[in-house]
Length: 267
Image (cartoon, rainbow, N blue to C red):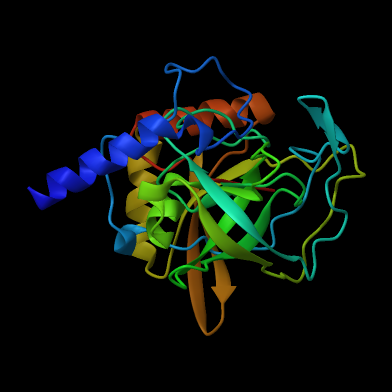
């Protein structure tokens, strides 16, 4: 009964939360529902994993600057190192699940991602709920929230981790995760991602098993790419190469439809 009441409470706040929840830009619409909401399958905070910061290249995807939304012009930061800000966070959920984010990736409400108006895409940010001191690292891959009193839109999962799903918004502290070796390709006509990384394992047999499962259902090649990681080897499972951004999105949609995470685009 307690769990049922909790779910009903989440649904209630989500349904009334049109003014509280996300206003992120996911350009692949139209959406199948009018109002945003929590998903039918709820998760616990301990099930939500931090995004793992990696030196993703910054390409033109999602980084048009300036860009205009609702008559207002926004400028993407050229350098986000040292960025820190406090303000109000909201969250977005089921309405946007499975649709494109600003850089063409597929939004997965169960992953630790976020939308921000001016941080380069992708960026990694540590978000701390000032009410309870809970924190999470999220990957910024979307634009929003386009409300003047909010500074970031977190995924449903990230909001669960921070403990404010029931309330719609929370006061948070944002701090950029500085990563060395990031290649900024915004001024280059090339630099598109050509692969999707769908997993990384410390045990080779686990990577091989995932590769075999995906290879059986995808037409795009799937391979295991070992890389040195500290004192050991990390076995990365990658899909590709793909020809262009549209092909990348189609593969991501296939993965989601098959019950997998959409993967992370890499060069």
